[in-house]
Length: 145
Length: 183
Image: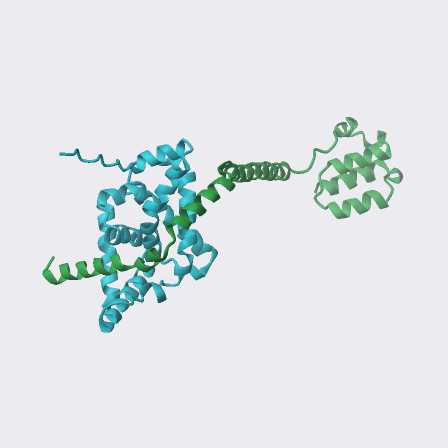
């Protein structure tokens, strides 16, 4: 470090030492001491400590609850729609003529829904009771694709 | 020949702190008396508005007395107090932009000596204060603790939770930038 730089450092320190001197002179030290003691007496430290601890704790609890609720919602959505009721046993044997209208409706609903809207219309509007066995078989085949 | 009168031992900060822990209020008052002016200088140098210094000093002591259980004597009480003061000032800055004002005005207006010298000195302080405002907090506090308060790097490092080498680097960066600012 050369002399100029040293001189500058010294000058800088000198200026720094003067900074705030006036504020320090003007400070009422005794008044400050009295005020500090009065505040220490009247503002119990326990209150500050409790507030300082409880507040983040409640926030943490709330965050955990929020995560749990969020995870539950996600799990329900991922699991998808409920399982359809089991098909009547006769449907597997191909004896559709022996099924009642309600059973046939269940069979049709259990076949999946490739053309869901069209199927819904036909199964509800046509009246499955009125169809013959070949007609029902043809309808099922068309629905199966 | 009369024996010399015994000199009353001045209690150390540590003794006063222990006394305060035991409920001795005058010990706390003595700590305030010892360190309040130095703390006021530090806060004013760090950018506190002159009108706010009183309140900031009070708030710093309140926080310090409440946190004394965590003070392990890793550094001097005064240095520790000033790091708390830095936090108090930062919080005050958050609450009000007013405190960011560079401490000009009354604080820099000396009333004695040659008017020209006063003007030059005042200008230098104004520039230094403005330069300090531009520094990162760590550099500003290291600079003030070193240049204004005269602490050693080891002491500063212990108070700020860093190493003496890092404190030295912060100081030199601060000095370089302040010199550029004051050119």
